[in-house]
Length: 155
Image (tube, rainbow, N blue to C red; front, side, top):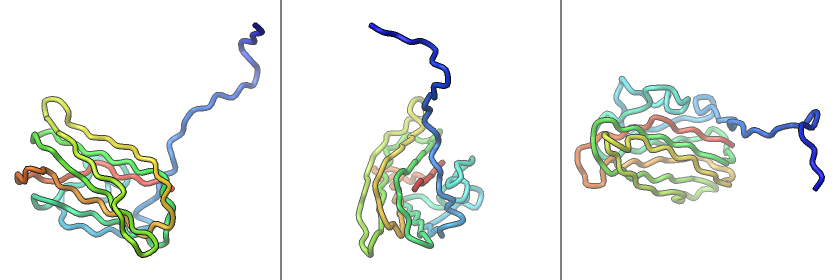
């Protein structure tokens, strides 16, 4: 066996953080509700404390792009420190005049155990004009409040 150790000038490949789209610059957002102490803007920049609904029950956050975007990656993070609940979220994509569901997922929050849901999805979506996140904070229809710590999108 031939072996070489310590090659000069060898490049090591390290995965880099993707170039996240600046939602504030390229899109507008529509919300069903918002707690004034927890606005949506920090969630798109991954800055605490993130967004929280202003009313209990199902919430919709619709991100409408000024110009169609290609979407390759979406990162979502939800945090719940207080209430045990089963949350379901659905992600919809609008492209070429049609809206379709691209993702649906449930998560069980348990403040004494599992209190963070972090998801990182890879997609190959083209000419996206809008993304919509529908959050059902508790599928048993308790009066839970929806929240979102992070929603990042990369093209």
